[in-house]
Length: 461
Ligand code: ARG
Image (cartoon, rainbow, N blue to C red; front, top):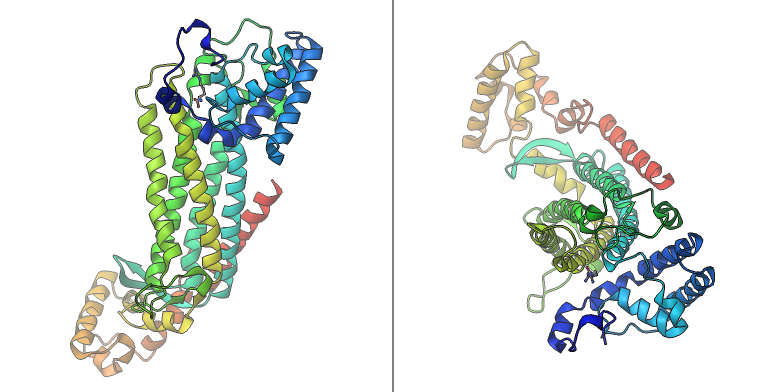
């Protein structure tokens, strides 16, 4: 019999029971559910809403249930409707009438809102650590390859020379934003909804601030209807994780390309690549591909949540039970993706000579050649045109800009001198870009220390 069976004359249809039940997935919030109930019972006792002895009995029994679930002595009943009902049923079976007082001044609607907020805050902390781990690896690798010149691309065409260090620090910038975004989401998740009741709060003289204090929340929700119907924080986290995955997916895509024999820029460690069942020569970047693939799945969670919430009238509706599986899935997949990606990237070897060779082709220093002429007094557009003609000449004659003789340069403009070769040298090109945010050694060193400071500050907060 259901706890709420009072007004019903029949048992619920078994398929409806399966359809309605959320225990298979909300069981993972048992710790938050019980901790929340302990705080609620404490407050009920302190405010004289239930007898002090009952409150104490409830708290002791709830602690016992938590310990038993942790140790495996108590198993979750798959037939239960949800985790809230399950815990309350076990509690009542263990201590009788006192247990029946726990749900005073509370509804499952504010209870589930509390549980999910607490659960997500815990998960956010775990994700933050994983993001910092990846940032650490990026900073370490950027230091190692700070001077390794490689081609930078636009439209996947070789564009201008950068360094591998500078290149991967772009991903550090993204990840630091991801980290900040998650922290920001946590700030809005950190609001205590208990006391909203079913939707209209309660007539009991509860102390919401006390419950918030006991649970470590920064504040309490200010509108009981919003308190039970708000899932913005779930959506926000789904968006944050989608963006984080999108960044890792772009990074993965690059690694996939770099590890192809067409590029040959990098090599994955054997532990982070897989073979083919038919082609003996293959070493596949499955980890990077799966990160890319799972990104779609995390976006799916965001889309599901947005669609689920769209047009829902206030306040609580059962549709909202659908928030859990998708956000849990997004969290699980982001966490494992971060973990595996970090290790894969950490163990990846970079072929610096191949990077440099790739940068010496494709007229990657054409802009610098034009800048050389500009520095000698020519307007940029005129210089741009002459270098365009030089590139055309090179293409027709199978040469690079470095390979042209001074006579060939001078055939197009007598502004050229012996020093043109130094001006278009790859290292000159890179180190000339010493503006803040550029690829020059000093600028890369600055970026690395910014990342390191970010990590240190994040770890001490
Ligand atoms: N299992 C429900 C959920 O996840 C808990 C809240 C149920 N409330 C209710 N009035 N049926 O949303």
